[in-house]
Image (cartoon, rainbow, N blue to C red; front, side):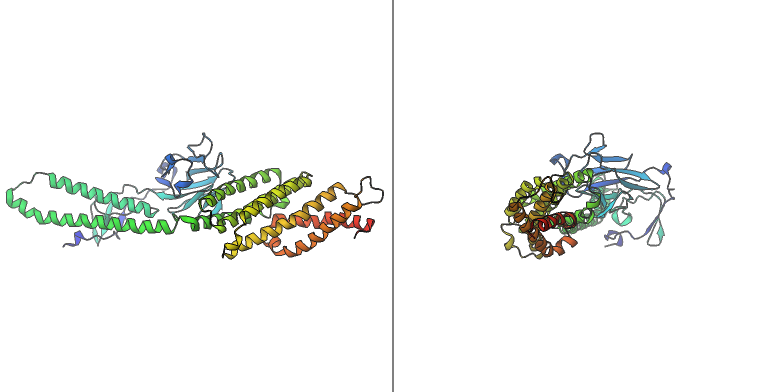
Length: 445
């Protein structure tokens, strides 16, 4: 067997005239390949690829986008992909759920081969399409002529790719080209008589062996990539869903839990929309995996994150009393989610169940004290409106519970649930003081 029949990856160099990085050079041919087609809105979108070889592309729910994508977590105008200064870039167009490159949230960032870009909740991989390269090729210390075609064999080509999937596709493409060439050679008329034909037979057989090796190599590479895909980005099952859900909630809490000081109506709308999308996905996941108490724990955490924002919004509107039925509804929903909480051995899930249960218990006194202070804001003997003795006895109990439960939940409040912690702090600084003054005046302290 000659060295030409061996399957060897090319490790030489390709000398190609330098291409200046300028607007005249034009955009580099690239693609965005969807990594999780299941998140796309309809089956027709399976295998979605976004071509970046030409003009810029915009992605969003609106029909005015070059790539309309009406999926969960996608804003009307979400992301823009454009070519500038020799590289493709991605820009967030003011979306609700943001744009992430390799898990880092970005406003405008350059892209390189292999990057993962998350548009809302849909991950894509940025890949560079291999250009048609011709030039002076140096291999094994020898220079080939300028007409050398790297597509002749994989051992004499350079792969300009950004993903293992593209490498597999290119390997299969090379194998197919070689097979087609061999078929044409076999079908061509043989000149020189029987002796000539007999002399060619070993070479043909040798080429068949080479083809078989190509097929075996391609199958092996696909198996390897399939394992990578299943264990890595393409991981499925409840473990993968749980990992992604926890990461999404963690990122939201990191970015939004300390926003009480700047919590406007617009902020409320944006955050509740994000949480609504999370809850919809979690509800779908828990219906698919109904025995996963860990997934239900994440759903319980999102339920509380929704509650604390709705509570703060009602307080800002001067309607704390309307939070009473809201709390009852949330406690009922939490009760359904936590029915099997003792079955989980996962410590993180146990902590979530415990924290949410305790904080919802604390929310009762918080709402009652807020409502009392708004109804009786002026603790004075000549006040036009004053609480009755029965009301004072009831609010005194709430005041004592509030102090006890705040101490009990101090760690969870200060480390994780910062938005609710700001509400609790405001009650302690202002509303509880009003209750104490009324107690001193009426002798119920």
